[in-house]
Structure formats: C-alpha cells, structure tokens
Amino acid sequence: MLYIINLILDVGLLVAGRRLFWLFVAAAGFFTGVELTTRFFHGAEGLSIVVGIVVGILFAILAMALQRIAIGIAGFLLGGGAFLSLATSFGIARGEWIIYIVGGVIGVVLLSMFFDWALIGISSFAGASMLVRTLALEKPVAGLAFLVLLLAGLAIQFADKSRAEKSRDG
Image (tube, rainbow, N blue to C red; front, side, top):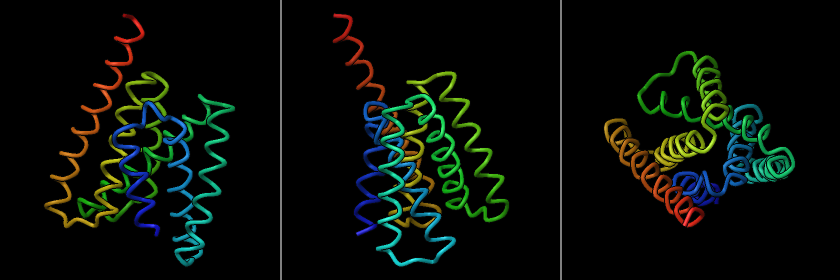
C-alpha cells in the first residue's frame, strides 16, 4: 500500500508540483512523517502510512493558510529529502544530516527567489529522485532514470506554465 501511495505522490510531484502546490506541501509532510516513523520507531507500514497522512494533511492545511511559509518549509523538507535520496542513489552514505540540511537550505533559497520556477525545479527534482528510490532501481540505471525523469518533469511543468500564461494573457 505504501508503495502505491509513494508512486502516486512521486508522479504528482514530478508532473504537477507547481500547479498543485498544496500537493507539493502535503507530499513533503507525508514523506517526512513516513521517514521519521520508519527511522525512529521502526514502525509497521500501517503506522508509517497513518503518520504520513496525518502530517501531510496538516501540511496541506498549513499551505492553504500560510502559503509562503508552508512552501518554504516544504522546500526545505523536499530539498533535503531529494538531496539525501540522490546521494544514496550514488552510493554516498556518510554525512546524511549535512546533505539533508544543505539540500533543504538550497530548496528554501530557490523557492524564495524564484517561486514558480523553483517550485517547478524542486518538485521535478524531488519527484524524480523519490520515484527512482520508490522503484528501487540499481545504481547505474538509477542515475540515468533520475536524469530522464527530471528532464521530463521539467518539460511537462514548463509547458504547463507557458500554457497557463498564454491563456491568462490572451
């Protein structure tokens, strides 16, 4: 069940992170809740799903009430998670917290400076890296799959943004 939820959220982030920013924020909460439950409580899949859903819902509510703050938090969590996931896929296992914090700070800075563009980039990056992780691809294939998925996510979201701007202007 967790595998299917992860696939749906990963693909959603990859192709619609900018448009569905609340999904972006809710996914950050879900993934963080699942990760914390798994790491600290070594909980069963059911407990991880429940904690992830509760945290995800709280983040989605926060996103609607305090959009910029919520997206900053999500940028940190997804940036950190994406960098950690990418480092793991390349076999880097040391300095997990440093990698997470660096990725998180980069996520916040990018979202603050270039909100729409950063949201597209970070959601595509997070969706691609987490999808590769969910699919449990081997290291040589994982890197290539990540790049292909990242480019596909960026292309889909940039095209969507361009269509939205043209329909708004035209």
